[in-house]
Length: 330
Ligand code: NAD
Ligand code: WQD
Image 1 (cartoon, rainbow, N blue to C red):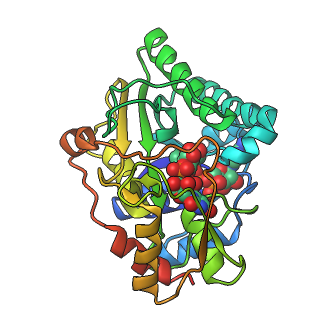
Image 2 (tube, rainbow, N blue to C red; image 1 turned 30 degrees about the vertical axis):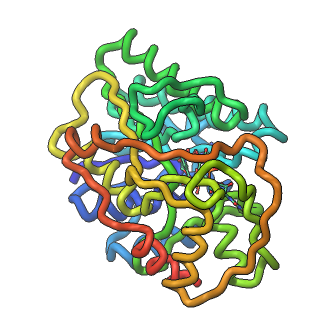
């Protein structure tokens, strides 16, 4: 069984990738400092997969510790999910974001090179695209002009990786640009579980459903969209996880750098998401319209045709299924 290291593997996306890897005959090795996750995730992954999970409590900026892990366990490829991800927090704490996200990537790249591991998948984001472009967004669309430190860390890391493959032909790098990952494994045992106050739509809806937040604020009602609220491309996290495996399997990690969008290609508005949640969970969400959130775009959705063609991947779960799975964690 090939070992695939997942940095940030106890987090939301990394933990779902671990399930997909097992399902496809790979052995995930989790590396996480638990800064935004809980160790109980490991136990729950073991219940879901009925396998022993190898994990290391490590800050991947700690090169000494990281390299010792690469020495101990042979590594086929690395899925690099570790990072801080709150846009709002990054505006308050830009240095922490640059240090953690870029610092950890540089540390990882150095340890990989020293250990002769050259296959890397990087968790990037739709946020790297320049906003003023025709939709759907394709991998060839313009990037940059980003308005917050979090997005800039993703953009800068992408540039670092692009320079790296030019200077050293041994690297196989895949940049996965996630659109809006939502939902959870159908067992309901693992989920998006940020430690601080959530900013994203679904975690906020869940908090309202659980009566941990009194009301959902819908940011803006007069966008030029189907119903005036923001439109996004929501992708089920299990589809996203399968996308990572699709980049790895069938010896697809050939040398060079490739970029893939991961989304459904369909946009849903905030009101559609609320209605779908209500319909499939049976819980009503009280909400009020407030002013637009700074930095938000009206609409964003992608073309995932490149992943569909080159990776033989396609999304399987729609918004309805995403909500049915969310019901399991309520
Ligand atoms: P998450 O916070 O749930 O998971 C990230 C994990 O990384 C956490 O478990 C955290 O403890 C760990 N971590 C952070 N810094 C670390 C470090 N220095 N060393 C070791 N572990 C560290 O976030 P997620 O939603 O799973 O996101 C995973 C990746 O995907 C992130 O890089 C994020 O920027 C990117 N991404 C997420 C989304 C989204 O909406 N969730 C969208 C696009 C891109
Ligand atoms: C979705 C829609 C909001 C919360 C962010 C990051 C992006 C990426 C994914 C990591 C928008 C509206 C939200 C709320 C609302 N993360 N909304 N009330 O903004 O597309 O992307 O997460 O890379 O970088 O920017 O996702 O879930 O925050 O918002 O009305 O309480 O829901 O205005 O239209 P977004 P989101």
